[in-house]
Every structure is written in structure tokens, then in C-alpha cells.
Length: 326
Length: 307
Image 1 (cartoon, rainbow over the protein chains, first blue to last red):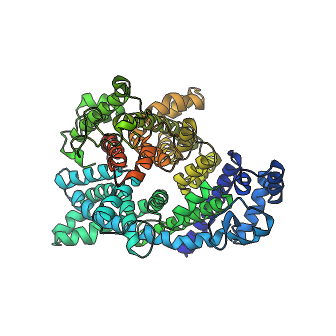
Image 2 (cartoon, rainbow over the protein chains, first blue to last red):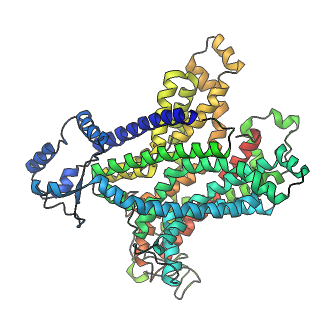
Image 3 (cartoon, rainbow over the protein chains, first blue to last red):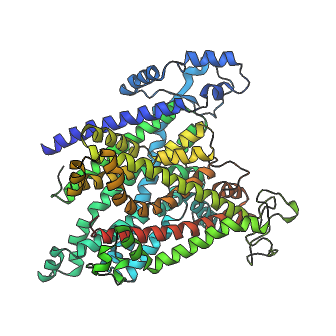
């Protein structure tokens, strides 16, 4: 029962958040200068034609009216159509814009659903690599505060957090795929193409994880129940992996929920560098083409995912540590 | 929190240190660690070089010199010269000067962005925490919403649609990442405002504004500002990311981002164009991050290790 009321409350809050996000991004896109119609119709189109198209598409109405129209579609699961992308996936051509091709423009939802699994695959692999690495470095660090494993963890996290992801991506692509030929890098033709981008993402993700894990591990090893465990005759291995780690992983889990938006930012850049056909590449292209409906759709979908992930994180955290309240 | 365990600072400090203000104590604790001194030294050297070297050397970072193009950095490949310690790019511009000028912009943008973030975040957090109630709810809901949009998407969306100038970049980066500061400030203010001294000031007739600015701000802000050093590094990375995808400071002004984006095209025959600025950026960021991390640990220790 508690779970149910918790879920209802959090989902309502989440819906509010998604609403504010869409209002924010919708207004921002329309307030800042830059006319999408100019881009669609091509630089040579006469001013009158542009005004005509803009009026037909409802882009000259007050922002509130536009927003209301857009949201009524969103509620029915319709995120609108892309301004520039045709449905058949051919390259975008803004120059020959006219009303007869309007019907063939790709649906925003389809575009997002096409690329989302690719990005989830990339992000999932990155999280697995980052977690494995952080446990490997962070647990010894937390068990030996002040001694060399702790220092090592400190240095590794300080250096990793200072590596700009785009630069690291270029360097790793040069080293591992051009010079050594170990991993494929550019484009996507199979699972192997996910590994290199995932490593870059993992490097970006792991410093915070290592730091949190070290600190919480060190804190928990000072707790009375650890000392009691020793008295009860439990082996050190059992204490560390059975008892301490379980408690230390709760802050880690919360962190992963918060880190999601950071991860998405990394995905954007990494996909751009490796030409990986995911949500990030779609976003960058949408922005560069001023494809308003696509940008809005992506913002709404990502904030919804963010909300869901944080609800899931809180649920799992209470399963790991029953003392936490919903 | 544990690297500092090695530092001879007992949890019960002598009376003389106890009397000092919290920020003095954090600073002293941080200064006693080798990591902090190392980071500070590197950072100062780089800053001094960035301020003086470009003018002192007299090399114009945007001047082409086709005769001297694609010279490799010192000792790394045949053809290097002392005149260009980090080599030159595809049209003969000196990489060292370009990197240092890039560092100037990067640092300028990083620091002013964090200053803006602190202003917006801390004042909103303070208002939310001080007044509570409806104001608090509204501000915190906005904060949640802002946290759930990846800030890089926001920044790219706004800068891609409008024109990226330096003030615009600072504004966008600053306005899209204040929420964490708002949260931290709010939580501290909420505990502080119930203390006696705040009540006393209220009884004495001090206005809310006066209490916030004169009493709470000097107490709360310094520790937050220390930790914001870490964000300077983060913002410098974001600035270079924006430059890399062409939405940062526009060429011909050299920034780390656009130098690396440029060098990427020549990666196979002149690897140093993309690599060297990155090494430079990475060293700078490591020094800043070392300082920031030590300051953060010192703050956590002073505050009892709880937070």
C-alpha cells in the first residue's frame, strides 16, 4: 500500500516536472532569435512566402496559444512532426519546402523511438564499465583511508574528471582504432562499435562514483556493526562484501539517478564524435537545423526518463536498505 | 575525506584554531596538504604564462605563416624548432600561443560562469530556505525541473538557435547549472534560520533582507565558494565542448574547443594539433580539480564529516 501511494505521489510530481520542462524549453526556443522557417524555406525564399508558411504552421500565434496546441497533442501521445526530416530517412533538404511534402515529414516520436534503444545500449554498457571500474578502485580506497589505495583512488578520480570527453574520444579513436586496430570506432555496424564510446563515457562517469564509494565505504567501516561483525567471527571478506558494501551502495545508487542528466550530456558529445546513431546525434542535428518539434520532443522524453529513473532508484534503495522511508 | 586523514589535524583542534572562522580553518587544513600545494603551483604557473606569454613572445595567435606550417612539437618528431615549442598547425600558427590564449578565454568564462551560478543559485536557495512555505515550494519545483533537463541540451539548444558570443555563453552556462547551489544553500539556511542569533536579530527589528545579507551570507557562503572551485573546472570543460561543436567563442579567436575541432581533421598527418591543446587543458583542469577536491574534503572534515 505504501508503495502504491508513493508511486502515485511521485508520478504526479514527475508529471509536473515534465510539464515545467516542456514549458521552459518551448518558451526558450521561441524567445531566442533565429527563425526556423527561414532555414526550411532556404535563404533565397522571399519574405512574403516565409510569412505565409509561418502563419500556416501557426508559428506567429502567441506563445501561449502555440503551447496549448502543442501540449494537447502531447497528452494524446503525439509529439508532432519534425520540421525538416522527411519520413523516408533521406537527407534533409530545406530548400524545396512546400505544402505537398508536409505530409511526409517524419514523426518526432518515431525518430526518438528509433534512436533511443541505441543510446540505451551505449549508456547501459558505459554504466556497467564505470561501476566495475569504480568498485575495483573505490573499495580498496575506502578500506584503507589515508594509505596508498586511497591516494590512488583520489588521483585517478582527479585525473579522470579532468579529461574532456571529446578530446579523450579523439585520442582513443586514434590510438585504439587507427594505430592499433583493436576496436572499430566510427559509425555503427554491430555491438563492437559500442565499446569505444562506452569507455569514454565510463571515464567521464567514474570519478564521482569512485569518490562517493570511497567516502561511504570509509564511513561505514567505522560503524559499530562492522566491529561487532568481527567479534561475531565473520571473515573480513564477509563483512566487506556482505555487510559494508550493501550499505555503501545506497548513496551510489542515488548518485546514479542524479548523474543521469550528466550522462546524457556525455552521450551527446560522444555520439557526435563517433558518429553513433543515437539520441545524442539526433539532438545535435535537431539543434543545428532548428528543428523545434524534435528538440521539444527530446527534452520531454529525456526529462520523463529522468523522472522514472529517479523513482526506480528510490524504490531499489528502499529494497537494499529497508530503514529508508518512501 | 580520507586523504586528509594523514594530515596532522586532530578532530579536536586546539583553542586557537577553534576561534578562527570556518573559512580560515578550511583554508588552513587544505594548505597543509601536498596535493593542494601542487595543484595551486601548477595553476599559478599556467595562469601567469597565459597572462604574459602571448604578449611577451610577440607571436600573433591568428597570423598565418605557411612557410612554418605543421612543425611538430619539441623532440617528438623531425623538424622541431625552439621557436615553436608545441609546434604549429596547418597554416603555421604557433600552438603554444594559441593554447595559452585559449586558456585565457576558457578560464575567464569558467570563473564568470561560476560567479553567476553562485549569485543566482545562492540567492534563490537563501530566499527559499529563509521564507519557506509557498515560495520554497515554487522555487524548489523550478529547481527540480531544471535539474531534469540535461544542461548541455539546454545550452546547445539556446546557443545553436541564437548567436554564440562570450556574454551569451556565460549567461547560458550560468543560468543552466545553478540548481545544485540553490539546493545546498537552501538546506543550510533552513537549519541556520532557527538558531538563536537569527531570532535575536528579528526581535531587535532587523529586516529579513538585512538578516540574510549581513548575518547568514557571510556564514554560509565561504564553504560553498570553496567547493565551487570544482565547478570552475567543469565549466571550462563545457566551454570547450561548446567550442568543439562550433557553438563556443567563434574562430579566429582560438579556444581549446575550436583548436581541437580543427586539429581533428589533420589527426593522421599532424596528431599534435588536436593532442597538445587537450594535454594543456587536461593539466589545467587537473590542477584546479586537485585544489577543489582537497578543499571539499577539508570542508567536509570541518563540518564534522557528516555531509
